Each structure stands twice: as structure tokens, then as C-alpha cells.
Image (cartoon, rainbow, N blue to C red; front, side, top):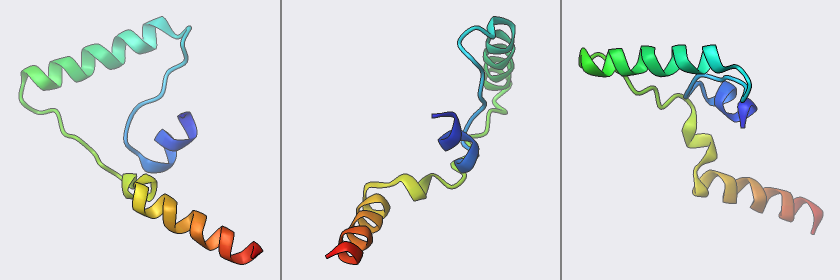
Length: 65
């Protein structure tokens, strides 16, 4: 999951045990939301759409057929 978030640039990453980092991320985003300044970065999420993943799978299957 971290690799997908990093590659697509669609979010911030924190480990399960990184409580202070998680708290900071949540507070930062909540404050931006309250100020109506929270921006959604869709990044490269299209690479993980059903269409794109199916296209890649089709190419793989065609190459081994």
C-alpha cells in the first residue's frame, strides 16, 4: 500500500506505530479542511483504474499465449 501511495503521489504515509506522525497528518489535514484549503491530489491514480490494470493483464496474458 505504501508503494502505491508513494508512486501515485495520492497521500501521506505513516507506520501503524507512528502515533505522533499519524496525529500530525490528521491534524494538518483537518486544519486545512476547516480553512477550506484542503486540496485533493489525484496524482497518478489512473494507473490503478480497472481499465488500466485490465489492459496490463491483457498484455501479460497475450505475451505468454
